[in-house]
Length: 71
Image 1 (cartoon, rainbow, N blue to C red):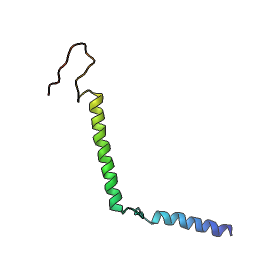
Image 2: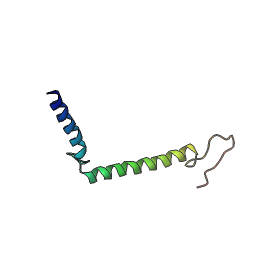
Image 3: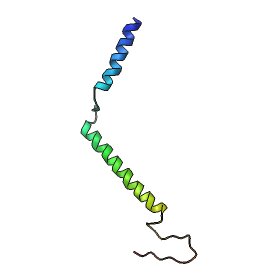
Image 4: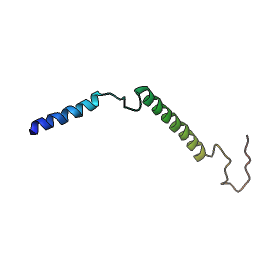
C-alpha cells in the first residue's frame, strides 16, 4: 500500500511538469507577453532610477552656487 501511494504521488508530481506552462486562466502566449511587459517596465524603471541617482533629470542642489538647467 505504501508503494502504491508513493507511485501515485510520483505520477502526479511528474504529470504536473509534463502539463506544460499553459494554465487554466492564461495561455502560454498571454503569459509570455505579460512577462515581456513586466521586463520592459523594469528596464525602463531602472534607467529612470539611474538618471535620478546621477542627477541627469534635474539640476543639482548640492552646490552653494546656483546651477541652471540647460534644457
